[in-house]
Image 1 (cartoon, rainbow, N blue to C red):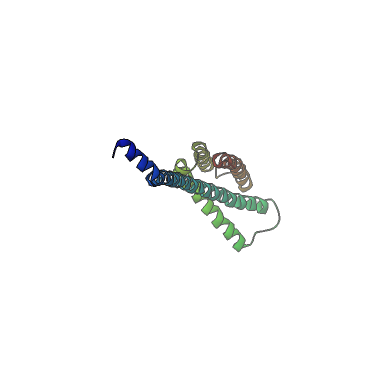
Image 2: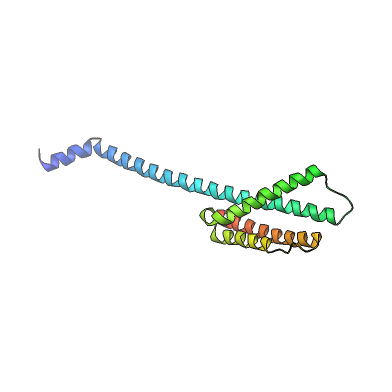
Length: 158
């Protein structure tokens, strides 16, 4: 058999078709795995942002309740105050954790916002009157929440 006969034999057989189909199969698998990794990473980022935003909301709710209680005649029930306090502490923990590991899952700017938030909250004067302390705290939390939401939308492209 000559080379031309071999080439004709190979082209007429299913070897070429098998190689083409196999190549496309490998390419499809490779692209599919890349997309899967990308989607999983996006889900982890989204979960990190959601946890931080929920934590900020818990801190914000507690601070608003303390302001409302201090500026009016009614008192919050002990159970409600305890639930808000626990939500605030959990939120504080989540924010501190995200500020530390933020660059791994969040944008650099988002982790900088959280780091600044932690420093601003730590720098607050505790010898102020209760209502002034909590109003300043609420302002800090509101600003951070607005900026983190913006960064989350930008980073997650939603």
